[in-house]
Image (tube, rainbow, N blue to C red; front, side):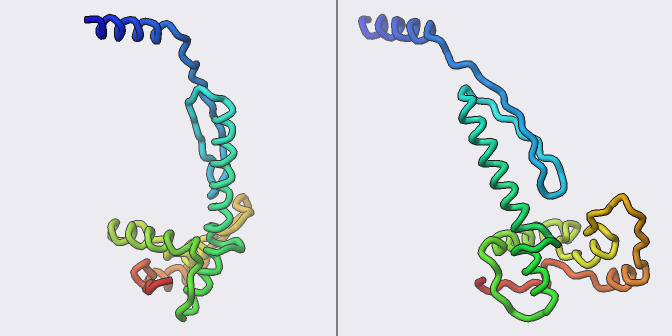
Length: 158
């Protein structure tokens, strides 16, 4: 009985102590051509700010490494893939290739990151998207006859 009394007493005392107030922080990050909205709820505002800074750094690093047409590891990989020769992939790209390959296969290639040339022909690689663009439909039709897939990439080690 004495233990139960102590337990009730401790629970009452704990219940009367002030609980930390939850703070909601919101932040926007521009990466991968889109706005990423992040919301974090925690009682430590400084921890929230550090988390936002870390997230932004991580997203911007991924954006730089995985940008499909600006200089970086993914651009290098895309250029080397076009050669048809074997090469060593960057360690920052290999997990991305493996995951996208699996997702492409699982989606029966409705998700197909191997269509970079087609994307370029449609003009999506341009920074001046507000300027008129007339895609080369003959080149697009020719490429559509033999669209590459992620299964065309053979991965053997790195």
